[in-house]
Length: 239
Image 1 (tube, rainbow, N blue to C red):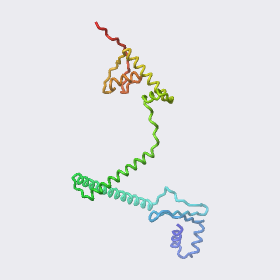
Image 2: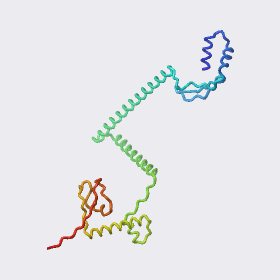
Image 3: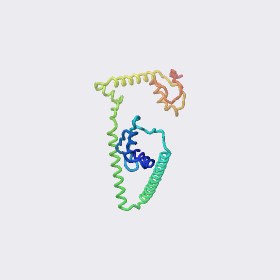
Image 4: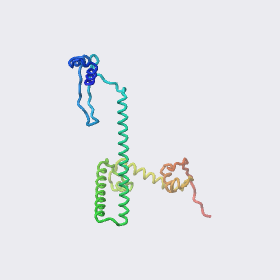
């Protein structure tokens, strides 16, 4: 900006001496701060702060765009779009070529037309892929959080309790709830309880599963809005 102002002043007032131009510029400009440049080539940018007398640092408003700057932005956008389109076309062409070569190689491999060198290279490639996948699975497994221990089955809990081992409160509660449920089932079977609930087996599962859920106090998980009902029956007497 300082150089441009000097050129304008020289063209407007050719008879003025150089020291006079400097004195005129110094009347308006207090100081010029040149910062370190950033970037390389066409993308290199360098900030220059101009401090004017009685004003301070002068900043060009960001919302003001000159026609020259707008044209430059449009040209850069067009160049960038052309580069991206060209890059996508080349990438698509490379991918199509790779797929065609792979299809041709697979067809020759199935027909048994590979040379010994090609067979050795294919085996080496497959071995490398297997080793890489094994290493990747190992790294993924190492990065995963440790899994919580699998809870013991009811059979194992019963065996531990029978052997005199100490159970946790949760395990003891599970085992007690299971035994209570089994006792209730035996009592109901002894009384001869039937299940009067008519819905399709395809939706609600097997009859044994429905009856087990009824005895467990759990409603059907088939999505139907019907409820379970009980009815006692007596064994018919022989005549």
